[in-house]
Amino acid sequence: MSNVCRLIAILLIAASGAASAQILGQLPLPSVSVPVDSGTLGRTIDSALGPGTVESVTSGVTRADVERAIDPSLARLASDRWVQTATPATLLDLRRLRLAELIKDNRATLEMDGTGNPARRGHLLAISPSGPNLAGAIRAGFAVRADDQDRILGLRLVTLAVPRGMSIAKALILLRRAAPRIDADFDHIFEPAGGTLAASAAALAAGPVGGGPVIGMIDGGVGQSPALASASIEQRGFSGSAQATGHGTAVASLIVGSDGKFAGAARGASLLVGDVFGGNPATGSATSIVQAMSWIAARRPAVINISLIGPRNAAVERAVAILLARGIRVVAAVGNDGPAAPPLYPASQPGVIAVTGVDATNRALAEAGRSAHLDYAAPGADMVAALPGRGYARVRGTSFAAPLVASRLAMTGSIVRLDEEAAKGRGRVGRGIICAACRTAPKQVGVR
Image: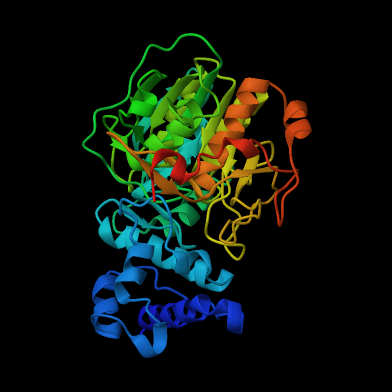
């Protein structure tokens, strides 16, 4: 049995344990190594498990359930219950499979960076390289594909095409040997930190940006919704044209939404949306995120919310540091891959306000990720957010907690005020729960 076959089987066994956790408790699962290039993942699930439910092993969790949990393109804003109660080891293995599936579905544009993280195929990023370092890279066989001088951030990003036939992992080693002082990294792909990103046919939300504090948001595009009909929203795409998404719409509604009993936490604020996906979950690159930061920074926002997760990346890290030095606060979600997953970024970067989620009992979400530091928690479950077009959906994840903290920071204008507001919670909640009363319960808007 291949590693991927074995991992899927273990996940199904783990799902059975999660379903009966109240009786049996949760047993730690061994971590299973996923191949760097698992192009047969979908077929492997079929051949390893067969169709339907394996009742004797899973107690109702099916092969389709596992596929849905790792599919990066489904239109969901909350994980299945069996995932929410899975062990940390199972959540970590689901993360590995999800990233492998993203690579498999986008072979032409993505590859692994050598440590299990997706990045743009055939390209590396050099951050503000000197002339001698760039010359050394060219002598080693690299070619300059783009040379962008960002005047807003004062940051130069040079995209280097790697030598023909070479993986980006090997290419980065070669580049650092050829130009030892060069600051270079992969062009990593970042993901939504809660639910999944799905494009929508809904028109983009738009409204005149005027009064109130300015809040930036880097995410998917935001669709029209009755909850956003009176909101001040301006959007720009950084991976093609902006396109409405379920994730982006939900996050925006929690910031500036207003519709009867549903209310965002920063009504009256102006929202700038940098869409780094263009409706495609494989295009949320470090390059596009830096470009979105620059566009938003030019408008002098009070805070920027980033409900996205990815590995530590030199380009994103440099851009965030520039924002922080200029007094622009950055709030980011810690992710939902469990405490066994590596600390994810930008939440783990020093100076960034890292946010986790809590449920209606003020308990930290069991599936919340681990960050190098944790500042606050906010409601992230047992709540709804707006959908593109019309209606609301249940949401769960740290993605939906971060915008509440960003909103309160923008409206109060002070970390000191946030600390005064922070309420006690259960579990790992940082300095406390912000915006505890901001949750709109499903029954309030007729969602079952």
